[in-house]
Length: 474
Image 1: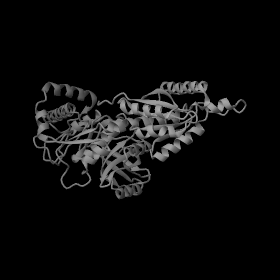
Image 2: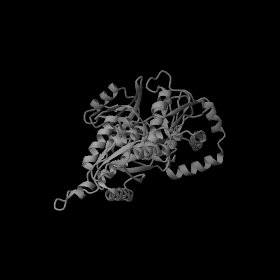
Image 3: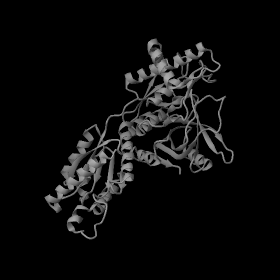
Image 4: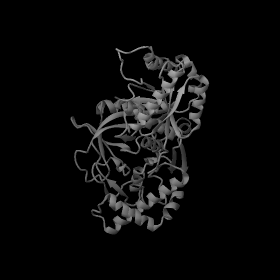
């Protein structure tokens, strides 16, 4: 699988000299204790590093510069342990170029009525400090994340963990490089977009490569590598030749594995983590990549069909955020409009990620009836039941728009013997009619990324970090 760097998050507390050195030592002690226990909780996907107590504008400014400089740091968590004059944070916060989480918490989670005194108050003034600090961030227009509650509660730790995944995705967004094999599908509007603006705003680098360059790599794949990949495929999935002759089935599957090995090598050698293909531009290839694309997405690569580079990048980005858990490229395929059955059947010609399969995927070979190429092998399976979020990105002249809604997913109601593809049924939680109408009005396209792992709050946070226009349908 494509790996993500082992990021960390720096944690600082805000205070001032008003309370004296002894109290500042207690502030530092409490801060370190919170960080140690957050790391020991096992709830956070990334390590938190305690960087002490901030009391001066110069110290805060240098700290934020250090955050920007250190590539291993994905973001900052701040806690106003006591009253920290917010003017001290202005310069440093304006310089910060990474995500910021304001943890509005308190070291102790109670009011000890019988013993409370001014010493206690001096060490438990987050209710005061959070308002001062929050005002400054609001005035700077940061749109930073605020997590409120006792730091030891599982709910608060889960919110921090979810934000960490979003912050890492934000950092990784500026490393995403999409390889376009061919152009976008002719005469289609929704797959078009401003690649320069995508790099400026979202960090996505999108490059064109002629299919002929890939064909050279495909033709050079060693047969022994295909043999090894074939044995591994047999161990992971069920091979289902059906009416195909053994020779035809094996040849088709092996060619898809040849494409898988070649595309992976092509991407890795050139530093790409996502790619897109177009069935109108396959000169030199015997088959449209089907099984090959599915296996690459399973490995964590982003993909977009019909030359859709935006969703190739979005798939990779959301896979990073979900740690490659049940997050897949998808397409609105066909509808069930019967009362009581309202749903969208999501699928694609070939390319849906097997990580959402509820059954063991089968490797099958069937005609494609489009593209004029040989019968491609593909993984056929049924999706899963559960809550998910469906996301698309659209390009408008004023910028990129992130459109999403929560959906209720379920398995298809029956087998589709004449439609041998991976398939997933879902319905917007607001209802098919309401959700689809709002989606269309917002300019949402037919290509999406469907995730059982991510939440609508995480999608919203990502859109805010990237400065996208957000349309949430719920």
